[in-house]
Each structure stands twice: as structure tokens, then as C-alpha cells.
Amino acid sequence: MKIYWNGESKNIIGSKVKKLRKAQGISQKILAARLQTEGFEFTDLTILRIEQGKRFVPDYEIVAIADYFHASADYLLGIQGKE
Image 1 (spheres, helix red, strand yellow):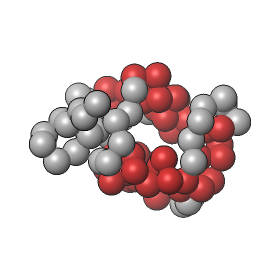
Image 2 (cartoon, one colour):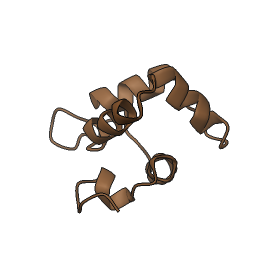
Image 3 (tube, one colour):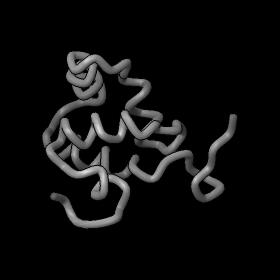
Image 4 (tube, one colour):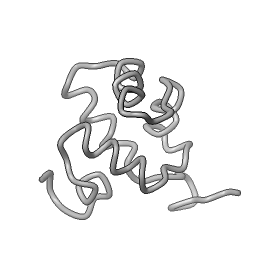
């Protein structure tokens, strides 16, 4: 299954995930490990592919990432400012 948002990217949250991760000063590997402790199947490659827009991100993963960063899913989706 191919899912494209704008013909180039499979998600619209990648740039915000990268921005939040870098603001915390953590690597993709550390972010993946922390999300794994919450019961999600993330690897550093998963985070890389999300940030590059090469991986579709299901709704439950958007919520998990938003919860980790104490941000709203709306923020990740570009709907409103960080809340």
C-alpha cells in the first residue's frame, strides 16, 4: 500500500518530530528506545524514516509521539501551536 500526503512524503509530522527531538538533544536511537519502553515498536531506523517522510505514521503512533514530547497531536499535524 502506498500512501502519500503530497506526492513526496508519507507523513506530515516528520519535520516536527525532528525539531522536538533535537530540542531535547536526544538521538533517534534514544527516542526509539524511550518509545519502546511505552510498548511501541520503534527503532532508530523507524524514527529516521518518519523524520524523512518515508514512513506512514498511524494515528496511535502520532499520539504516542505527541505524548512523549508533551505536545498535542494537532501540533504534530500542523493544525495549531504546541499545547
